[in-house]
Image 1 (tube, rainbow, N blue to C red):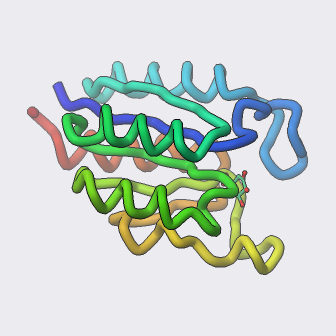
Image 2 (cartoon, helix red, strand yellow):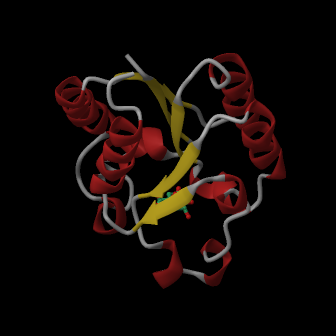
Image 3 (spheres, rainbow, N blue to C red):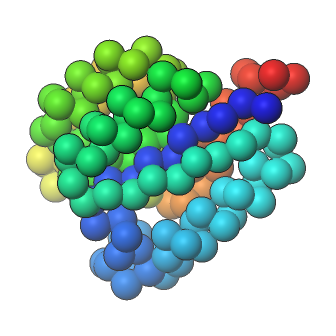
Amino acid sequence: MSVILVINGPNLNLLGTRQTDIYGDKGLKELNEELSKLAGQLEVSLKFFQSNSEGDIIDYLHKEGPAADGIIINPAAFTHYSYAIRDAISAIETETVEVHISNIFSREEFRHKSVISPVCSGQICGFGFYGYAMALSYFADIFKGK
Ligand code: DQA
């Protein structure tokens, strides 16, 4: 069975209470439960990680990334400036999809740029929690039968 990492960056532990007009009223626990359910149907295995620390995300990528089949990452604010997370994704060479809950292009200008996108196979943004499910469906499809 293929293994997909689901990594969420800073402040996403506050989902459900943080700026609910932008991020919705469901929490990270609910997101992970929804994804676990979908993963069961799609017959893939998920590993979840959330951290508010850049270094911890990098350490997790180093530790779990090489053996994983795919990575779904919402780097949150690190998206816009973390060359270190970008380099970690490049270094481990596991296919990675970038996800954002909100449409970063319809928000403040500083959110329009992602330094992570160039090292990902694609980016999904603006579809709320559904973006993670889209990324998961993609991986399940390409790893079908693995
Ligand atoms: C976010 C968008 C980022 O700009 C922001 O810093 C976040 C969440 C999103 O999921 O829409 O924390 O990544």
